[in-house]
Length: 105
Image (cartoon, rainbow, N blue to C red; front, side):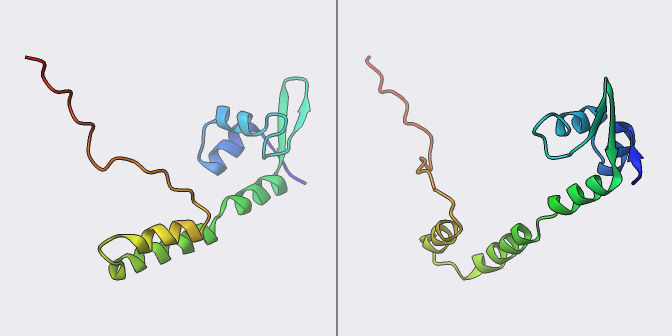
């Protein structure tokens, strides 16, 4: 068990020490040892956090989406069904800006 400081963890994760402290907040994703104001992290916990942050399933879904867009019909229904299959709720939005109010002159 090797203990690390917030600065060491920040360098390893390539984030700021303040971000590390927020991640170590009570209920945060990184467990830590607190002795007064002193914060220390177990290197195995940091390694586990790094592994949990890797999202190969999302990368695979993005790769599939990018590769399948070539064969989508012009109406875009293939893209809509892809998002619906993956549990994404679509919000209808205007494709153009709101129409300007008519002049009263």
